[in-house]
Amino acid sequence: MPKTGTSKGQGAKASGDLLETLRARFEANMHRHEGVQWEKVRARLQAKPDKLRALGELDKTGGEPDVVGLDPKTGEYLFCDCSAETPAGRRSLCYDRAALNARKENKPKGDAVEAAKSMGAALLTEEQYRRLQALGPCDQKTSSWLLTPPEIRKHGGAIFGDYRYGTVFIYHNGADSYYAARGFRCWLSV
Image (cartoon, rainbow, N blue to C red; front, top):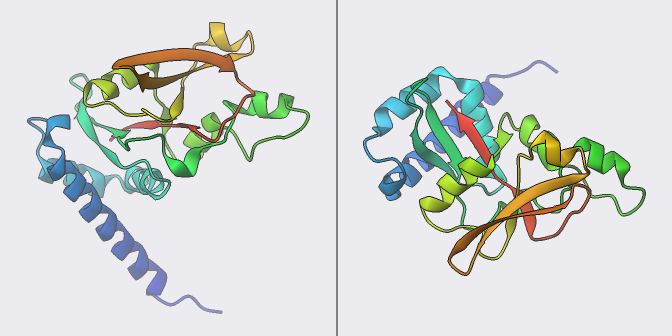
């Protein structure tokens, strides 16, 4: 069956809807990005449709991505999942593909590292997670897998973070573990 022009039109509408969602979130949370102008962010996003698609995936899975700064070295805008709890559409995953493959039974539906990569983003590092928490506490009832240093991962572990008792905690767990209240957050430079 020949293609009509509707899918292209629907894609433009979806991009417009996403840009409007991002703009509204940006304006409602100016404390996250003081000195950053929305029109410049929008222009950058429109020039990089692959990054806009990635932000659409982050938003669709409950991440509520927003600008959290500007990289002084590259001039890129830094986006991060800013949802109050780890994104609901990204929970119950083990850490990475090796951990998933190592599970013999009760395997989860996937892994955090591959899921982030498939969305065009990456897991937050511990430093990025602490930076996000400095903007306002998140993960007060959940936790988020974090990009794990190779020296920890080679021993079978992975790290995750949460916020309890007024403090950011970074813990470790077996990389093959998964929980209904643990997901992952993403970081994306645009």
